[in-house]
Length: 387
Image (cartoon, rainbow, N blue to C red):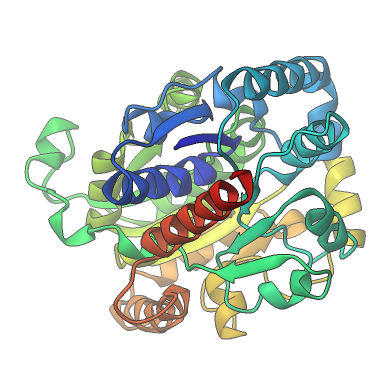
């Protein structure tokens, strides 16, 4: 079984890596090709090119990268034709993926196409549901309420749950972490997560850094740890090191999760990382903003109450959100300081863990296992029709 993966986001990279591991258990002879990131590479995956080249959000943020993105689209289509896989799995990144699938459709490429992570049509651009149904053969969703938006267009849609719930956080080793990174034993650790895209880092690091400075002024012995990825690590480190606040950067999943488990609280770019923080029982807020023009457009077009998955699942702002105009250092720092009160911190942890339980597909099966079952079902169906 040859499976071709395409993902352009760090969150998609994590999802795909969990799926690869589950597929290897169920189909040891499976071969994997395509475009992925650091976590997929740790599973032995060889990416066609650096996934970070696709990792950009916002209309005006995409424009400077358009020539490169178009080049990578052409390259990916050609590689799919060369590999001739049994199944194509696209993960998140609907902007890039939809164009890729459209090109494959025009070329009449008759390979089953599974899209993993539903575009958030319940938030904006509801018309995308019809397009997803036209371009794909199966949709695997992370949220239990999402299949209904796509099934009405005849698309096979399956709630598989979110693989973040199956990460073994209890085995994360925090011993020696402080010593490795020069963090005093008496220091209060705060996590700062400004994103993994270059465009995010440029917009969010100045805001998060200023929030860290305010926290440092109002606490006795803080230390700020910035987990990041290799592609932006040097940029992030350079910006934070220039300030007179005690800090360090770390890379790699084990160090990232060790940071979370030792932290008093965290400031995070809105996204999947929030679920990881919940799994580590780390009180946190989420924040995000685009360029000024994209902020303006997003404010008009996006009409949902919450951006955070836990908040959406619970219909309540359990994880404080500082989006667009509210992405301000003073507001962020003020809320983070509240978490120094153990009662406030414990309340968020308890409520968010209750929300997390809704991301399991069913008792006795893990999300990645359910996703792997669906992929194999699609593969076997193809084999039957090919006979």
